[in-house]
Length: 67
Figure 1 (cartoon, helix red, strand yellow):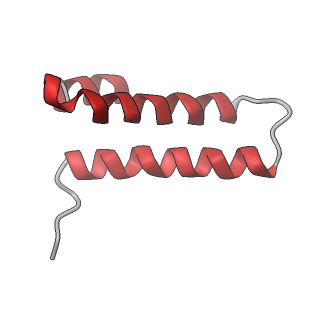
Figure 2 (cartoon, one colour):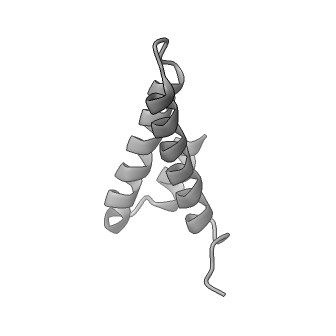
């Protein structure tokens, strides 16, 4: 569902870099989640990648505005 959201909200050519970054972070988080030999370093990287995706979705959906 995130791929569909990113394609719909960031579908234009000018958003290609943001879309690519979000997809790469999502791919990394998924890969690290299923890594059988994961250690602390992998968990920390997974958390950072997940946070990046969550923040991108929040920004794109209008949940992050400057006060």
